[in-house]
Length: 204
Ligand code: SF4
Ligand code: SF4
Image 1 (tube, rainbow, N blue to C red):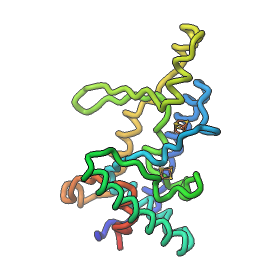
Image 2 (image 1 turned 30 degrees about the vertical axis):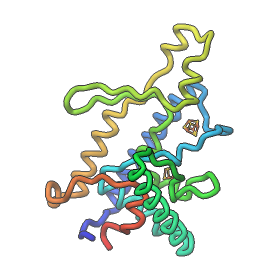
Image 3 (image 1 turned 45 degrees about the vertical axis):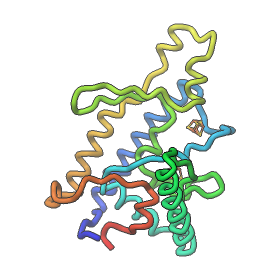
């Protein structure tokens, strides 16, 4: 597909960034009292697009550690997802199908899951390059908790948000480092995780 190869150094930097995202998520979730345990929803059926070649390469770094049968099964589920996305698009409906990496309610590639899986759920803010600020209220369960009656003003003020801005900037810098001399030559990426599975590894 391309001659992009993920070096150990860049993979480590991304793993560190992912850990920091997780710590930020955990701090905010603990503040709110949010946990996914016992939730009637499973956000792994959300439709997400991913935009970095680096996360694609890193995802495949993880996929290649799976047993061949588990990898084949995940790719088969990814094909079903893509068929569902096409049908949903034709019917002008929002897609809703479980991520191909979710098996029996759990992520089979937890350490390699992309950034959005580490941010979704808690309140967050993001300042775009054009200066516009976006605010994300968190998942439905988070919104129920933050709107809880009887919460004092100081408790409400203590509910912080994850600031996605510096995290995304670091991811963008790492993407540039990864793309190196191919930066600007490759098309802008807009892929679902199912696409990444079906298309295969970047350096294949
Ligand atoms: S992020 Fe929120 S909605 Fe999603 S599984 Fe966790 S608690 Fe439930
Ligand atoms: S990669 Fe893992 S955490 Fe992310 S949506 Fe898929 S199963 Fe869920």
